[in-house]
Image 1: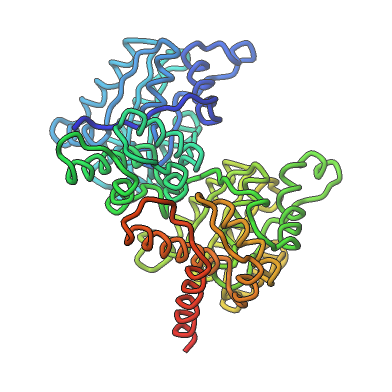
Image 2: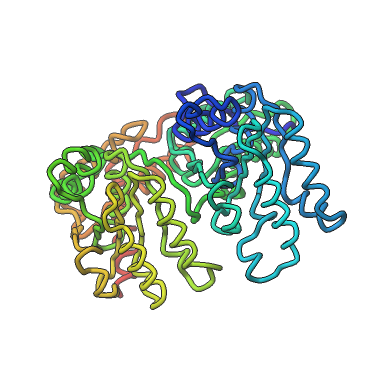
Amino acid sequence: MASIHPPSPDRAAKPHELRLQELTRWVLSGSPGQFLGLQAPRGILLSGPPGCGKTRLVRTAAMECGAAFFPHECGHLLDQFYRDGVGGLTQVFDEARAHPPSILFLSDVEMLAPRLVFEQGRAELPLVAHLLKQVDCTEAGSRVFLVAASSKPNTIAQELRSRGRLDREIVMPVPDRVARKEILEACVRSLPVEGVIDLESLARITSGFTGADLASICEEAVLAACRHQREQPRLRMDHFLMALRVVEGTARGEVFLETPNARWSGIGGLEPQKQRLRELIEWPIRHAEAYVRAGVSGSRGVLLSGPSGVGKTLLARAVASESGAGFLALHGKIFHAQHEDPAGTLREAFRRVRQSAPCILFLDHVEDLMQSYLSQHLLAEMSALAGLRGIVVLGATSCIDRLDPALLGTGFFDEIIEIPLPAENERREILELLLASRTPKLQADLDYLARSTQDFTGEDLLGLCNRASRLALLRVLGAGAPGDAIPQPADFEAGLDELRRRRRRHFV
């Protein structure tokens, strides 16, 4: 079976693509800024998760500029160093210099120049020193552009990222929901399918998946279809769901930006909380110039406090989307003791948001940072944001009593928004939104369901709708008759009973 490659859907160029094109033209032509005496950069760092299209992006930039393209994997260069010394690296740079205009592309550059290599006197020291020498010997105006790529930029030797070397960084974001749907559509377009493939749902549940991950999902779906029907296999939705069991999202739990696709209109209830987030975060970002003229600053830190399942994460994503800000989410699990460098991850996250302003850093389960040393790191990083506009740290917790009191002081999480359980009218609104988004549209007595779900969270209500849909589907499939699986009142009643039993077990 031929490999499925992540396509590049037809769309407007994104900011990181425009930035690379701009810098590439500057270095290879020397035109921008030369009359002002500005010196073009020798090289840049392109960072992003594996499979997000870094190589494709640089190759495209080279083609558009008519430049020779010399790609090299640093893992191979490292192996060559252990066998033959630094001569191979010299040859790599000499080849690019001999064919201007050219782009020398080094992927996984952290393998060639690891952090702390000088302090620890590691075996790679001669290679790193030679790499720095080769970069420094690439004269300005030589029309040779060094582009280094890494999925772990915080593990690169700082000497390589100093002024005059890789002193600029372009961050490639993880595809958002819209981009994921476009990639899936392009992948599926050439595949034989049977029935409806719900690409909208697939895009929604693949947050943290790169283009390469999505292509892998399609490949695994093809394999699943072949297992069920060797002759003329056709893909169904269940084949894609099977594929999701074996393909992991590369960027899940990592430090990469995304652009959420959530709106205030998609959140039932919580009107006072939404308005407060508009005032504290959205308006200072959307109307930044007006705030500067008035001498007013937005909030540096906002804390969402409330039980699990009430919509804290959804509110965070919505305010980022409505603000037009970048969004970087860190989840509590990456701060557990088994994580190799939680302090480094936190430091990298703050570096990213400073670089990507306007940007919102969302710390979910912020109470998990209350290990003494991480708490101090967080205080230090938030203190360093003083005077910077367009950067907000948005925390979420269901255990506010576990937070270091210093974090609730002025200049930190000094704005606290309580997120309560939804009232009856809000539960009705949430159910209406949930049911309106389903195909076929579910039938239900919303007033009765809202009255019957006291103390339910939004997450509980979503579970209720899912259970009713599942029961309806099982009934249709069991009858062996074609037709839409439209839940009946009895399905919702059964779903309510199941949820109530689970809640009773939980609270016993």
